[in-house]
Image 1: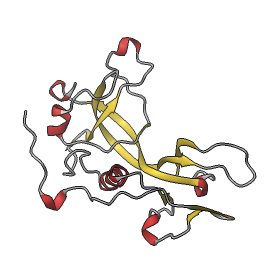
Image 2 (image 1 turned 90 degrees about the horizontal axis):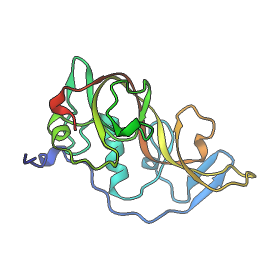
Image 3 (image 1 turned 120 degrees about the vertical axis):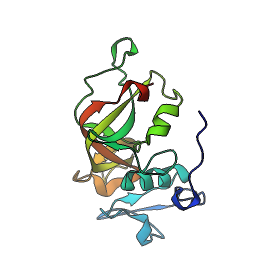
Length: 189
């Protein structure tokens, strides 16, 4: 199957590569030394740029666009279409019909065309689901230690209401998926 590129008007934003920017540790959390309004999400989270991928992910995740073509994700009576890696604890890497309720997704949804055409790029497989609810609940990125805490920065997911959020540099938005329904067999890999 040949998949055509999206029209120029719907392509994901392109941003020049940005080298790591110096961070300030303030009493209220992290900040860039040369911070601008666009360096924070609407929720006030400090946004990191690790290349074009991070900005494209956030753009698609906020607007619920296909992660591949930036067109609107497929919707049905069961919800929006998501392509999710199988959990690593799946016995014999079989597909799971009982996907865990409330799974956190760091990848945007997909359109039907790209769900069917997707290569098996996750080791262990993946499955296509419809999610009736996909609430934007947090971010994935680098959590830095607060002043006085002896720890190394770690990569993790934090919910927007987490009190450690001022010490996070986010690279991706996270949605919590609920009321999941496996997609029809022709949309599974």
